[in-house]
Amino acid sequence: MIRIVKTGDRRIAKFNARPAFPEEAEKAAASALAEIKSRGDAAVMELVAKFEGFNAKSAKALRVDLAKVSEKGIDRKLVKAVKDAHARVLRFSKASLREAWSMKSPRGGSLGEFYSPMDRVGVYIPGGTAPLASTSVMTVTLAKAAGVKEIVACTPAGKTGEVNPVLLYALKLAGATEVYRVGGIQAIGMMAFGTKTCRKVQKIAGPGNAFVTAAKRQVYGYVAIDQVAGPSEIAVLTDGSVDVRWIAADLLSQAEHGSGWEKSLCVCTSEKLAEEIRAEVLRQTETLSRKALVQRVIDRDGILIVVAKSVAEGLEVVNQFAPEHFEIMTKDALKVMKGVRSAGAVFAGPWTPESAGDFVAGPSHVLPTGGAANMFNGLTPDDFRRRHSFVAFTRADLAETKATIESFAAVEGLDGHGRAATVRFE
Image (cartoon, rainbow, N blue to C red; front, side):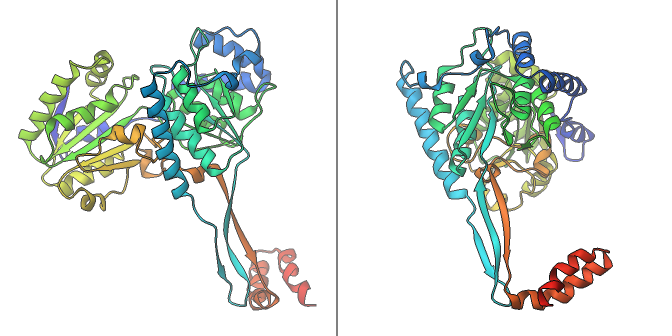
C-alpha cells in the first residue's frame, strides 16, 4: 500500500526507522569471517560454492584473467556508455582531490597537510539481482584518480563463474588490477584478512546487501571501510512545478533494486498532488520489467507520500529522513538546496533525475543509506588517500612554545614530553 500522510503523523517516524544491521546478517557474517580468517582460501572456496553455486577447481580459478578482458563482443552502445561514464567520473574525481597546503608559523616555520595514496585497496561490486557495471566505474575510477597502485575488485559470478562482460570491461577500463569472482561475506573476508591467493587490502569500499554491510562493519579495524550501506532509498521534494510522471518515475527508480526493503519518500505540498503522484506510481509500476520486485516494496510500505504545508516544512521532513538520494523538484531548486543538512547526494531541478547520478554525472553513487547520511558522506577519491599533517618549527618557534609544552607535560605527568623541548635549550 502507498500511504499518504500529513507532517507530524507517527507513521513518518516508523518509515524513517530502518535498521542497518539485521541480526541474521550479523550472525552469518561473524561465522563466515571466522572461517576465512582461520582457513583462508579453503574457506573462501567453500563459501563461494555454498552461497554462489560456483565450484572452483582451485583458489587460483577465483581470479579473473584481466588480459582476456576487452570490449570485443560487447554492444558498441554499451562500450560507448561505459567510456562516457568513466570519462565524466574521472574528470570530477580529479577536480575534487584536495590539494596539499601550508601556512607560516609565527616564528618562521611552517605547518600544513599533504596526502599520499593508499597502496592497495579493495572494492565490492554487487552482482546478485543485477550486475552493477556502473559501480565498477563509481569506485575503481576514484581509487585510480587518487593514485592507488593496486586495486582489487570482487564481484559474485553465480553458478557458471562467468562475470558479466560489461562489468568486467568497466573494471578494466577504470583501472582494476585484480578481479575475483567472489561475492558476499566471503569477498569482504578475503580482502580484509588476506589469503595465499589474494593479499589483504588497506581499505574496502563499495555497496552491498545486508550481509556484505554486516561483514564490512565487522572487519573494521583490520581494514578501513568507506561506510555502512544497505538497501537503496530516495526522497523527492516537489511543489507541483514538475510533471507528476517524472516524480513517479524517479520514486520507482530506487524501488526496483531487488531487496524489497528499498525506501521511496515523496514530500509534496498538497493532498491533490499527493493523490496524483500515488496514482501515477501505481500506473507506472505495471509497466516495469521488475514489477514484482517493486510490488514487494509497496507491500512493505516502502513508498510513502507526505503532504507538507510548505516547501520549507517539507525540506525538514526530508532532513529527518536523511536519504541516500534527494531530488529537489521545485522552483528555485538551487536556493532550496541551501537548506539541506542530511543527504548522501542531492539532485536539483527537473532535468536531474537520480539515475543521472547513478550512471554518468560525475560524483560517485556509493552513498550512505539507512539514515547514515546524517553522519557519513558519499565516496570520494580522498577516501583512497591518507592525510598527513606536518609541522616544521624553527628554533624561535620552539622557544616561543616551550613554556606551554612544559606546562602541559607537568599537568599530565609526562615529564619526558617536557624534557624533549627543554633539552634543546640546555
